Length: 269
Image 1 (spheres, rainbow, N blue to C red):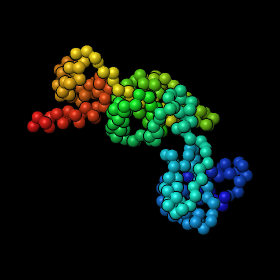
Image 2 (image 1 turned 45 degrees about the vertical axis):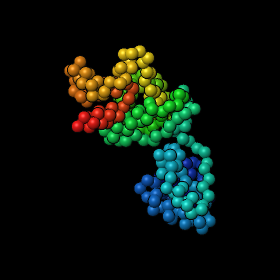
Image 3 (image 1 turned 120 degrees about the vertical axis):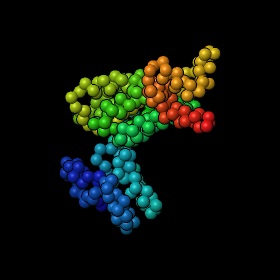
Image 4 (image 1 turned 135 degrees about the vertical axis):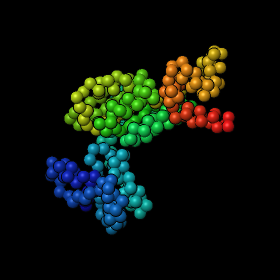
């Protein structure tokens, strides 16, 4: 190995010093990766051997490195993976949630509105999936946003889904918090401060059980507009809140119901 491309040369240098490894380092992070890749690929083509490392995870998995790997492959340079710490897989292994079928989604959108829309669309996709096997959804989340994210999931997907927060994996303060979405959120909310890198695992929403009686069949074919109007009248609430309640009742996303409501109204024009 001739040199090491690092997400943060200062962090990598601590490990190199500890193991008394003397190698040249060069930064390769989210802000300079595309420019740095051209330089590193030319060095690789000239015969250099370069290691790629990230600070606390696996390169290219919600970490820098993906662009460099693609450029190296395009240039015909061999890319050799070396297994290492990966928060998503490590969390899944010890979560107790189904590991046969899982979906890693990286970081959720930072802005609240975009995050809620993403979760609504994700629920709609999960509920329309014909597979019978349960699926585990895996996210990365920042400690200052985890309570908001859990609150959104509880409101949009329901608080009884099983969830796990895995914190500071493979480090000194590693911790797993297991329970329902509501219970995990309550535990974290009771703390003075939430620290560390967080992996959030949640069982995917499942399709709502269909009713076999006549009343259930009739309700299933009732127009969304009529159901929303009825909920508004019964609860004395506005359309937005009525859509939320109907979404929870049907096990569907609010955005999906809203689009269907707009289509119904468009057909009447």
